[in-house]
Length: 271
Ligand SMILES: NC(=O)c1ccc[n+]([C@@H]2O[C@H](COP(=O)([O-])OP(=O)(O)OC[C@H]3O[C@@H](n4cnc5c(N)ncnc54)[C@H](O)[C@@H]3O)[C@@H](O)[C@H]2O)c1
Image 1 (cartoon, rainbow, N blue to C red):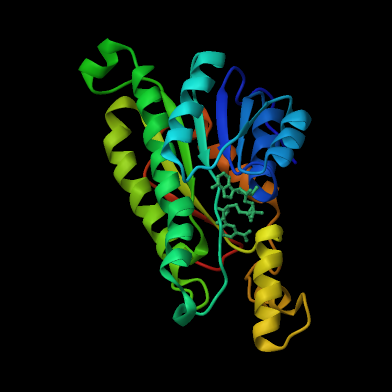
Image 2: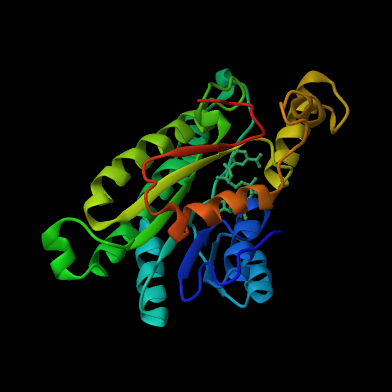
């Protein structure tokens, strides 16, 4: 990890789904670079563990429940007085044939990846807008950033997936939400961007690999291995590859970047 010392000093950051995988990597990096991080995570034990490692706040939450999101924002503001960064990382996938997707399967994936992300963004953005001084609001432009939001899409948000159709649809929607929010929040100098991870071996990928191995009669590990072989840079991503991109997008160095979706995928997708 090549951390940038004090890059996020005095910043309050919420990272959803930070109990494991990429989100934990993002939380650790932001904390290492000076932020106070709220681990907004469904799995309470994992939230506690990561919070302990980063000296942050464990906040057990199901982001598909809008009442819990509102409560989280209120609690974080009551405790720290502000929110500077939101990383909308929480996500779920269900690997299954498009022909087997039930309405419940569809709704659950959309409820977390798309709807939950939307309402986390909305609730935090309202707080960020409230933090903008009135004279800046009247002028309609600002000399500095009043907040950074990074949404997690996926390479599955760039092209279709026959075994993750509802996930792909939700991740495409994340790119749309990112652009809409970037336009809405631009007058407040609140930046909204997205990242598309490629192949990151995390518990989510373990599940994809296991399911596809069963479907196609492969050994466990074969599916991810063949997927990694197709990556132009010839390796899987690490959580820190994603954390580095997210940290940059949350930093002052990215003040003039908004509405963009950055592939962090070793070259799999190029648009
Ligand atoms: N791993 C990859 O290769 C990959 C590729 C593309 C996109 N992504 C995206 O990156 C993000 C992180 O993926 P990951 O691989 O670390 O996944 P992961 O499954 O390892 O971790 C996801 C975390 O989100 C939490 N979470 C799930 N539902 C939640 C909810 N309703 N409320 C709060 N927390 C919830 C889980 O408990 C878990 O800790 C996701 O949005 C995922 O879709 C991952």
